Length: 81
Image 1 (spheres, rainbow, N blue to C red):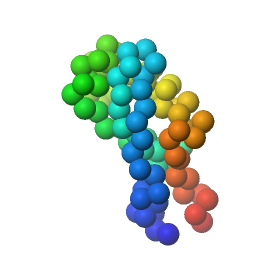
Image 2 (cartoon, rainbow, N blue to C red):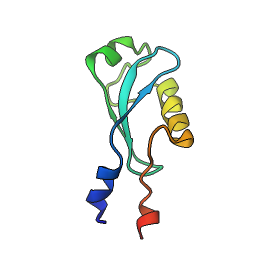
Image 3 (tube, rainbow, N blue to C red):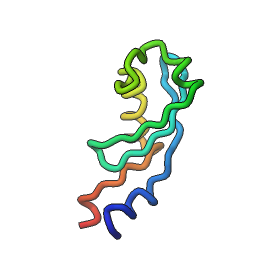
């Protein structure tokens, strides 16, 4: 499996913020790398999103919890080596 093929094993998964209930789509390519897709409804709902290049701390926490519980798949490149 090549590095690019790993992403096929980790589809985007919905994650909702516990504070404002904004729901985004998330993919974790590794424990260190997270891709987040925002939509207009999520941007409007998030009260802490002031910079589009930042992530709300409450949402970041929800994503971390989702990864730890397995709700979001984490593709770990070290497992493929």
